[in-house]
Image 1: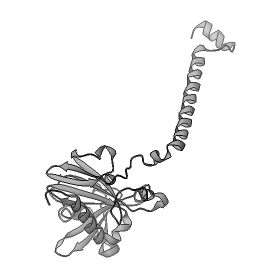
Image 2 (image 1 turned 90 degrees about the horizontal axis):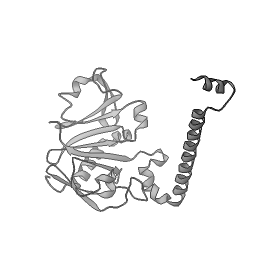
Image 3 (image 1 turned 90 degrees about the vertical axis):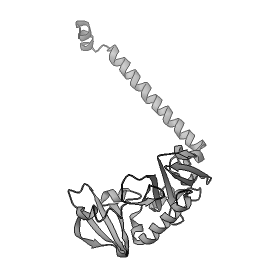
Image 4 (image 1 turned 135 degrees about the horizontal axis):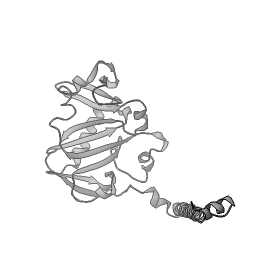
Length: 245
């Protein structure tokens, strides 16, 4: 600080640097206020467009090619706008409303927006298979050594197992149910606060199509109806498959 500057500060004189800084701060707040006002007005004039942001109610099919598979999914079931097109993709993400397994419509917008706290949206993901076994096939060689036994009784013949601390599955549990001669039904679910915050805290993956993996996430409440859920999801997905059945 120079002597002149120090004298000015001591005498209560104005600091030109500080003055410019305050002016810039004031302008920044003014701009933010104007932007906020503009957004508010836009919301009133274009409310219907904002309500549809990220969604579409167009049921026209989009043919998406993943590996040797063609999946014909209605546009209103495809989660991301950029993916609502025909062509090749490495992955396809859908959302479906349970139990109809339909896509977004104006009538169903409250369900997709979780209005009222009702959780009935499933999230599906298709991608090329990365593992040699699906979740059911991984139970005996992998999951069995990572869970704490015995488990506790769950709904509809399920047994709920905690994972060991060294397993790497933090705040998750494993839901398992026998299926006769078939490999067991297996799903991983978030637990505790994480589960309460998630719209679909349970996850299961199955082998699908020609070297595809289908992963679907669902509300934990649907574990009580896991047989119907698993069969319905596979039937809906198979209905979209145009090749490699």
